[in-house]
Image (cartoon, rainbow over all chains, first blue to last red):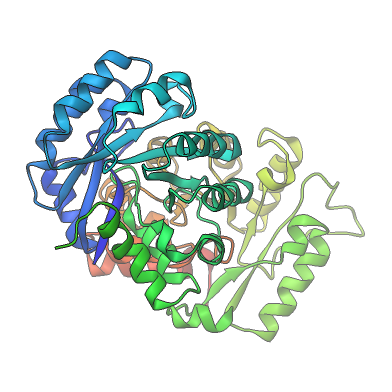
Length: 245
Length: 214
């Protein structure tokens, strides 16, 4: 079974028509996804408050569904209120930041200030693209050494990007590499396992933007031990999000 | 590589030499033919770098021994609105060889199809992803000589969507292996909610028909 730490609910401005809770549940069945953590595409691209409200409704539809509350640090008062509102709901297990959409770097003063009140058990998933993006998340992770940060896409699809992601993982022990992306170059997973160890790599699919097939295929094809595969696909996320038991 | 492909159930693989992509296409095409003679499951694809002034009398462009012509504008840094590429499409059309072109960014497929339609060449677009799927769906309905490779067809319902809109006959399985992982594109087709017949078309029959593989 699989735990997917990088999923989205809501519509996309691309030809994707499997956005209803029923269709997403069916997708989870198809890929044996036991649990998935979603953030709202509406919250990320357009309206933080409405999107998070939709995510709260969405996760109620299936016991496998959990959520990140999306935070836009450019709107600090409302973002702070979003945390207060949703962290009383046990299905909200973390925070999603997307510097490319919000325009607010992961190491900005506004982001650092916003996360001051984040409970330590809540996980932060940050969209991480390129060396500069990785360095910014590393600065954020250094500022909050007791929190855990997931580097979404492990830095990106191009070779220099995912290698930067691995370097970031090596630098910051409180970070995890998440594996999804459109272009998944051969050997990125094996190199990541060799460098940071399989206990700090987690499976994400980016569904419903991307099919889980691609992220799953790279884990299945990687020259790594069966135990490493099990950790990446399931065990690390179970421990990180305290899903076990 | 051969044993890995075989372990995934690959019966035949259209492939080419990177020597032809990065250095000398004539030398690379020779290497591709040699490899396919040695390993008959490899079906040779030719490549041409249009930055070189190809097709001189002493260097005729003979595509007859190849199942397809694959080009690499991104790696080689040339635009699609480029006279040598248009000439290449004309050449492929006259030799009845399908052309494989990457369509990673919006606008590119429209540009390719505009020229391909004019010369009547069959085009297989690869690297079609969520960014370009809308554009490609429109083009598939407008040009019968257009097909999509599944290597980056990465949205959860893309295979079903293309099948519903224009038919599974327009999809050809591709993996881009070993540059990217093989099993992702395979799982994407295997686990799509389409009929067994459509799956067989995508994974096997369409390639045999379109590329003329025996």
